[in-house]
Each structure stands twice: as structure tokens, then as C-alpha cells.
Amino acid sequence: MPTVDFTIGHKDYTLSCQEGEERLLKRAAGLLDAEARAILDQAGRMPEPRLLLLAGLMLADRTSALEDRAGSAERELARLKANPQKVEVPVIPAGIGEALAELAARAEALADKAEESLDI
Image (cartoon, rainbow, N blue to C red):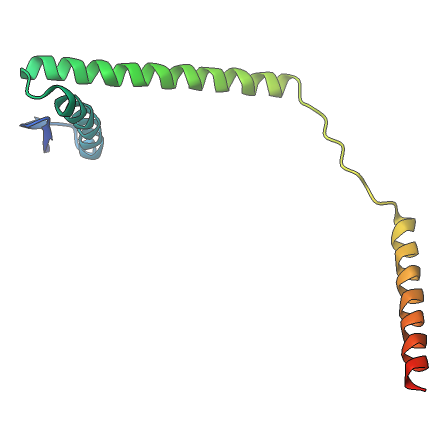
């Protein structure tokens, strides 16, 4: 069984985990360590159990906020799926393309005439 070494606050830990879970354990420990270090930066040294409790509560608070946001996003998605909004996209009629091509040809003919009159 693999073991993972990590630090939380100022204390080193070693835990065993299932094969393939090392990365997940390191990530979780890193999140807990970041909270613990933020607490230590503000409050200074404190007993390990209190530090771990406060860091765990901070992570639980953040997780709760993220769960609320995810639930809100899921409800909004369900609402949009149940009542999709229609979006109208303007379509250029085929005759407009032909009219624009005719105008372009006339403009080129006028430009040619203007060039010829300047060459005289």
C-alpha cells in the first residue's frame, strides 16, 4: 500500500492510501495546508487540533458555497432546457445577393469610365 508524505501547517504527516489515490490525497492535503497556513498567518501558532478544526471548517464553508452555486447553475440549466428561448437569425434573401452583384458591376463600370476620362 503506497504512502504519501505531506505537511499541514508546520507539521509533517505520512498516510497510507489505496493504489492510484496518491494524487488525490496530495491534492486534498494541499487544500487543507493552504487553509491552515492562512490561519497561521493571521493568528500565529496554535494547537494542532484547533488548527485542523479551523482549516476543516474553512474548507467545509467553501465547499458549501460551491455546492450552492452548482445547485443554482443546475436549476438555471434545467429551466433553460425546459423553456428554451428562440433566437431569430436574420436571413439575407437570395435576390439581395444578385442586386449587390449588379451594383458592384455598375460601380466598376463607372470607375472604368472615370479612369478613361482622366487619361484623355
